[in-house]
Length: 275
Image 1 (cartoon, rainbow, N blue to C red):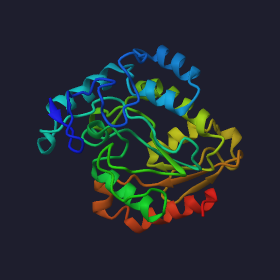
Image 2 (cartoon, rainbow, N blue to C red):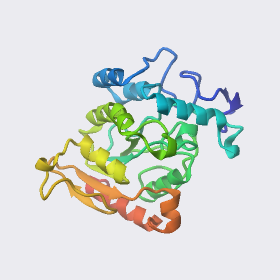
Image 3 (cartoon, helix red, strand yellow):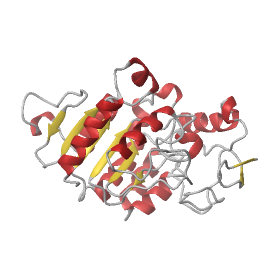
């Protein structure tokens, strides 16, 4: 067991449900989805975001992803060898009534899979939350761990796949198995959302599936194509914005810059009517 870097409480890796990890919504008695059919059943019945987060946080429906996230939590990265790893699925984070949904691919093995919060504890999260803070959408530019006091009013951040995948590449079956969780989240927050920001092409495609848009439903020749700064104005009145993923590689090579991130989130804020 190792001590949480902020609270000092000792935890096993992976962290057992209900053992006191900051923000852990589950208890030892929380229902566990052990397969794709159970994910569908549980996702269809959730009545609020808190209940959804509780169920997501203990899901074990994808054997390869469960094995990988837990292996990473035991082996660890050398720089985090003295820390406990969350090693479980990562829930959405932020407002339960957001005007903006930020959608990513999946948690990072040594980021969210370690800290227990989406886009937290890695370089991508550093860039994302710094940009969100500059846009006035979160209270701090720093996203370190689940007990750091970070908060948001008008946004929610979620991943299309809730477990860290090997090579950052979930299989089509894993994506499909996890999709009902995202569908349930959208059902619960969609009355409030005006803008969806997709971080990368995978998230863009997931967003189009989430919004239920087939080519026949969209103006022009087929589905909108992903691109940084691309805006798809959908018939429902929702607006989908594309943004390159704030990965270390994209930022290092200059494919994505802080100014480009600022442009996207300033535009998202404007289109969502947030002053």
